Length: 65
Image (cartoon, rainbow, N blue to C red; front, top):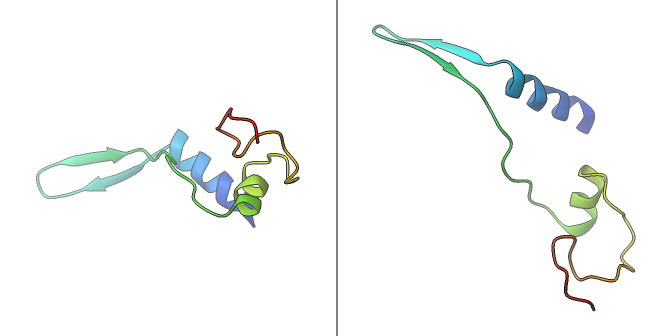
C-alpha cells in the first residue's frame, strides 16, 4: 500500500496537474515536505533501521544515549 502512495507522490512531483480558470491557466507541482508518525512507523516508511537499540536517541540526533 505504501509503495502505491509513494509512486503517486513521485508521479505528482515529476508531472503536474493543470487547473484552468476563466482568466488563467495554472500548472501545479507537488512535493512531500513532512512525514509524521511514531518511531516504528516512520522507520518503516522511510526504510530506516527498525531496531530500537541504536546509539542515538533519534535518527537526526547525534547525541549518544
